[in-house]
Image 1 (spheres, rainbow, N blue to C red):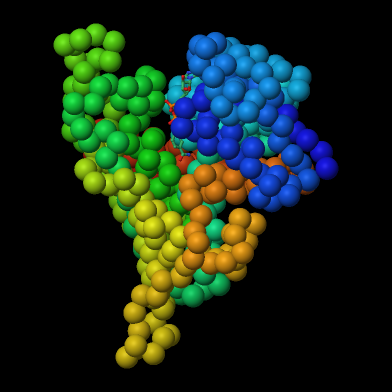
Image 2: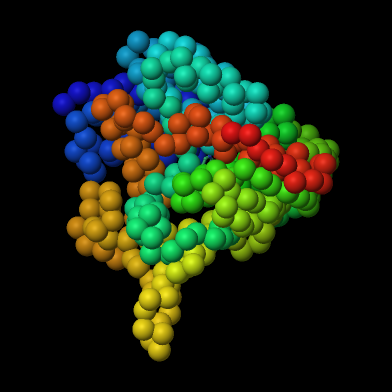
Length: 376
Ligand SMILES: NC(=O)c1ccc[n+]([C@@H]2O[C@H](COP(=O)([O-])OP(=O)(O)OC[C@H]3O[C@@H](n4cnc5c(N)ncnc54)[C@H](O)[C@@H]3O)[C@@H](O)[C@H]2O)c1
């Protein structure tokens, strides 16, 4: 058994999720490479100190450079706003640290290209936090597709809608700024859709035509009463897409759709069957195959259970169900195994860049109103 020192930068939703994964991985998987929570960072010493206590870290700092340069740290979690991902990741890769970076990869295509270049000259492992591809029932869906149960794939249809920003009274935040976040719903949630697309179709999106909508154009400035700030990135985004392998479909995302809590839904249509998933019911898939007796045929619900990779590490019986944090623990497990056995991760920075290129092309297409061919 060996340990690996970890440092987490940013302690909001994702910093907490990464920290829970680090704390839990040995108890769930009995891993031989065991994360050791060394140091955590946030913007103020008091916040960092409180979060170190809550999350179980030995030390804290308000300077991310101290995490990256800490000699006891070999694996860095980048859980800060998007415009900081590149600088932190580049400096970590430069000195040979492994990087678990949250999605989207960065706030600009140029930064993402630089991250890939740095990862290619480093021997460190990289992974981007596209966790919806790590759910055991989604891995099972991929197996069903690979076994040919759907026949030849023809259509991919996926949306990710949430109501996080639906309330127009909600104040402006970094997510609504092109400078701090990059694109809006596109980078924040459509990026997940594209990760699912590339993972399940096993081919990249290579042609798009897109459209965006900024629904709430002005928001209350959080720092000044009665002052409004402009929102300059998309609240809603849609695209028609073609994959390299001939599959066609449409994808979309919205951060302003009331009632949609975690509305990631996808359907894959093949010549022999159809498979469907809804993240709000993350322990099930629905499958229809034409070979069934047509008089009794219909979509059947397959519940996640110990037959599906990784599930049995959590629970011995089906039907109990996993949750979001469990899936994050699965994601970490893939990274730890890759570090230990020097195998590949998915999606590494190069795979992440392919996702960024699709996002970027959809954004560009919404301006020039034309189909765009994507060169991966
Ligand atoms: N994989 C997923 O499902 C998922 C879900 C939510 C967010 N994310 C991504 O995770 C990242 C963080 O999002 P979040 O929801 O956790 O945001 P958040 O606002 O909840 O947390 C961000 C944290 O980073 C801290 N921070 C900001 N700048 C910093 C800096 N320079 N140094 C140190 N700390 C700094 C903030 O104080 C805050 O604690 C984003 O890139 C986001 O897109 C991924």
